[in-house]
Amino acid sequence: MTKLTTLGEYVILKQHEYPHATGELSQLFGALRLAAKVVNREINKAGLVDITGASGLENIQGEQQQKLDVYANDTFKAALLARGLVAGMASEEEVDFVAFNEAHTAGGKYVVLIDPLDGSSNIDVNVSIGAIFSIYRRVSSPDGPVQLEDFLQPGNRQVAAGYVIFGSSTMMVYTTGNGVHGFTFDPSIGVFYLSHENIRTPEEGLIYSVNEGNYVKFPEGVKKYIKYCQEMDPDSKRPYTSRYIGSLVADFHRNLLKGGIYMYPSYANAPTGKLRLLYECNPLAWLVEQAGGKATDGNRRILDIEPTELHQRTPFYIGSKAMVDKVEWFLHEYPQQ
Ligand code: AHG
Ligand code: MN
Ligand code: MN
Image (cartoon, rainbow, N blue to C red; front, side, top):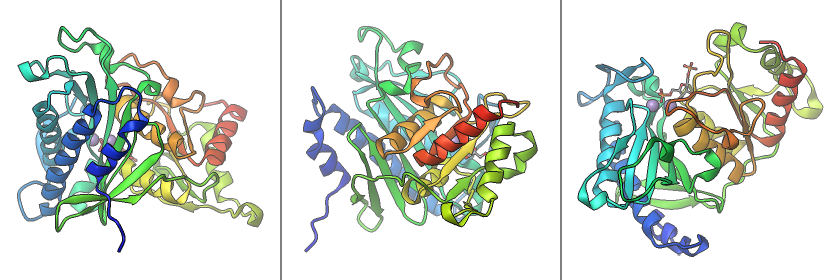
């Protein structure tokens, strides 16, 4: 009989691999896991209960918040707040970081940054969505509340990162710096089981993912790279396949497993692109590197960018190493916007 390992068991099993492990990170994962299950339950009812559609509010980036954006944000916040390990949280759906000032969170060692619901535009049409998280050790004095500096750390200081994908099945995928591991949710008993241990992404992929509707606005190097992807060349198995869901988590997850590149470039009136460095790009960049892939802003390693703002955006090129190298080459060869 196959031995089934749960997410909770696995995190504890692997605990010894981290220096100074105290079991706290496993408890923190417990909070994220619980919130993921609650959000999953709600998503599965979308269409039956009044949870789809706009909430009537806007977030800090001036985007319409969907009811599920707000629900997922509140759920993750409540789950994290309930444990005493997290001193604060920053979210796509909150203007400022949230300091957890309750007595039981005093001395909490970690801060969490989160995109509680990624792919909002796909909620109402039954297409995969997700949640992305990033965890750091706080750097400010544990005697007082968390500070902005706790959240503005470069991605190379993450202690854990991952995502939940609500797709044809629900999965949680995470890294703590010892490979990337995926767990599939069994809704009948409410447990995540280890299904994808030590995920490696192919060095060379055959899929490119980009919103080609924005083609005319892209930098010259990206236009040239897209044309390269579409050229006929049997030796390199081109033309490549184009796949774009419009939920970063879902596009990333597919490319991670199959090999491919996801691009969200800068464009004329958006020099830093659309995606947010701290709670979208950094966690996925660390995951892809842990799986053997690469993530850059076209120039720099995403994980080495020193953040200056909570909701900072960055151009984003992520996926199979050979493909990201290639688009970087085009961007350097054709530097004009
Ligand atoms: P969010 O729903 O968290 O605001 O993120 C939306 C992001 C990302 O999920 C997706 O890849 C991208 O926006 C799609 O943008 P376009 O519609 O401009 O292609
Ligand atoms: Mn998002
Ligand atoms: Mn979001």
